[in-house]
Length: 396
Ligand code: RFL
Ligand code: PHB
Image 1 (tube, rainbow, N blue to C red):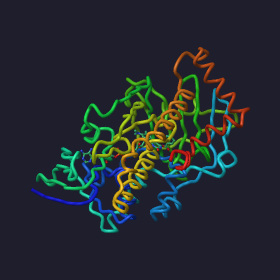
Image 2 (image 1 turned 180 degrees about the vertical axis):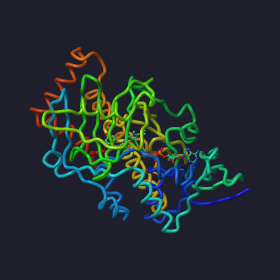
Image 3 (image 1 turned 90 degrees about the vertical axis):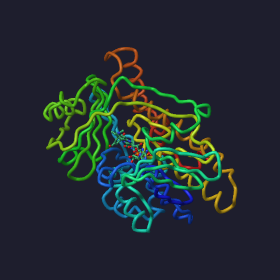
Image 4 (image 1 turned 60 degrees about the vertical axis):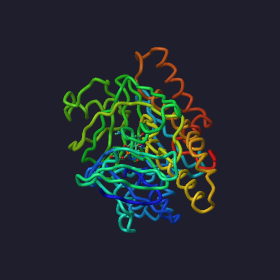
């Protein structure tokens, strides 16, 4: 039996777990990370790309933003398109200079893992945590399996940063929380392609054939998405059909879409999910373990980072001042931002996806919103400030 001991036992080496580990190290608090998958697998997982200002600021303060600042692209606005008419919402003027940065999640994960290991941090890959015990006492235990051997990680606190399918949420006593789930009647087909982006900033588009998003990764790689039915299959979508559909949905006068070889293709269902409590005793949930938002607002990774910022603050107060107050408040503080993000993600999703017949009542409401953004700085500001992410002080 392998026995380990640390102050904070972290389950999961996604953005939440890795960011938490580095925030704790800065406070002189020890942590060990257990990760189910291999290092190669975690670093190849293609997901998010949009980092809020808060997230970039945290990575700068942790000294892990060199590559992000070099290779990531700062965007000062976003294009919104409706029935072929495209407008731009500038962030600078509307948010007092806050921006977003486009940088792939797997690059973030690589940078964080390298930094954690370079500083002597312990991380066990291919080590699934199977059970969390005694979290209502001062000495919780995480059971795991490593190289075919059973093990126990003894710790003061457990941070379940183990994603939507992890064991953390299932371990919370059922009478301590309520779950909320909304399944949207559409999915996203996402691609990565070897082609220069056809835009300098993201384009979110409503079209009568469905939503489309043009995002990017670098000068040579584009990331694009289209709305498909929930029961659609990737095999129905040849590369040619995907490019044709994207060109139609994103199209606007005087603009054309560049195409190139597609090297990644996958379908993701859209859902909102969350729990109204993220802790019990010495067990804390963070990131996708506690909530999922549809990706239309670009909020998932950023919420994960915001959660662990609050968790790290609470743990620092415990170890430095022997006070449990901030930790007790963790869910309450984190949930304020999570509710805001749920609302904004739902707003962006329902504004840009085809939900009902083109020309229906729902469609007219969508169009009315789009037309209002064009004429009202107040409305555009609401979108801009949510999109770049509200500062931490707003929720504290
Ligand atoms: P993760 O990244 O899922 O990491 C959890 C880790 O826990 C491990 N694990 C376990 N380890 C040990 N023992 C167990 N029993 C374990 N069970 C699980 C897993 O292997 C994994 O490594 O969760 P985390 O850290 O909370 O991070 C959340 C983000 O990954 C997620 O919210 C975003 O990717 C969502 N998202 C986006 N977020 C943004 O902020 N901006 C975006 O532009 C954006 N676009 C997206 C997205 C998600 C997408 N998909 C595929 C769902 C676009 C897409 C298409
Ligand atoms: C991405 O670049 O993958 C991305 C960007 C913005 C979103 C969702 C995904 O809203």
